[in-house]
Image (cartoon, rainbow, N blue to C red; front, side, top):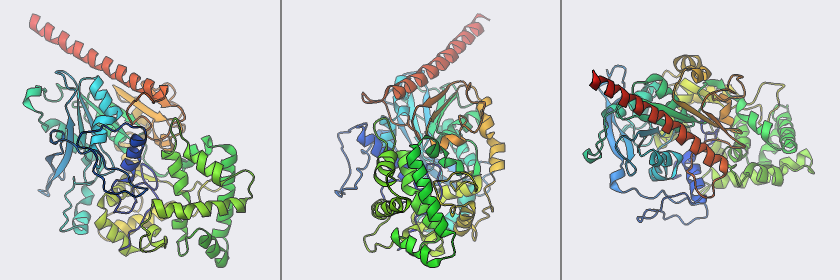
Length: 541
């Protein structure tokens, strides 16, 4: 069976979710998990790991959770606005109450655009977990509707159910799910947890989950006391060519120039009149038979991946691989292209595609085959779910910039490619719009303007994060320099503060977590003091 690898978008990155369905982890969680494993930040339960794969690329499964942590399930309406469908589905969530002391807050997070495969990592080894411990709180972690097991789609009906119900997949419905859980959740009676909002709720998230944190604070102020949004692209935007701007801005200048020259040379062939030259170029990269936009996506994958997930306080894969090993200063443009081709084909075979039965990469990257698309919808509905959200609400289409602007990706990658893909996925069965209604999304949530309307809100971004371009700390807007309670992590990329602090953490991450703790603690103390003073006043009356 052929499964298409779609490499044209994603909130987390343009290549992340569209991994072969046999892969154990969603790409986002897999990358985060690899990071935690490498940094030795996994809580080692006595139960140990569940992992029978001994290949060189195997990633150990997250430690199994003891029963008391979940998963738990809550029946939520398919349509919170008017449940005219009469349909409910079971939504998964997890609880870590190990650190709770009476009066402590609930730290609440929605997992966002991925199936939850590593709840134990999140519950015990992230900044969210560490803040929960420091604040004597309870951590509640919720799977997003239509991802993983939290879906009305059944195995029996598959694509039919997905096409029928997916119009009810929206950020507004997800926020309503979160509010519903907060209003109905029951903790063990011996904990003596008061109901929300008597127990204060702090919503935390990074990436799209960071959007949800900010939007919960905005739309449900009676339930949510405070929120922390990290790497949150709150500005919906269809054409998101600015995704690549930080790479051009902060990458080694000589290396970026060499990449731009190589891509310009490649485009001179792709936009030329010689089919023989085009065929020879694609053959060089092991990409025979690729459509031009699929070829463009194939070329950008490692560059975007190494930038977004390959940079931390000790490592810079973008510089180490793309610059020092491939796009060298002493090479000609043609030599750099040949070097990239020699790297890209085996890397793609090992990283993205199942080449057990065939080394042909075209089926893996083909986004034009309707049959393959429908098979992927059946085998990997979470992929379809995020594609639906981008096709309808957010855009985030990571494409080439307008003519005349510098580019490190082929100009064959355009918004039209995403329009075609959205229609191919959903056009025959749902009312997917021609373009995402980003104006409506920004009207509902405020886009960048949300930054001026929220109290008790912390904003965090990596200085080099591509998604910062759509956050409230974006260089595209000029009024963020004095934004209260904002943190810029130096030389950092996406969700850099997600992993917990260890003795090996750089000082800026230690400082960032301390700043979050101190700010949240001050807000909680102030609210508790106000409540106490009000009670005393009422008693004196």
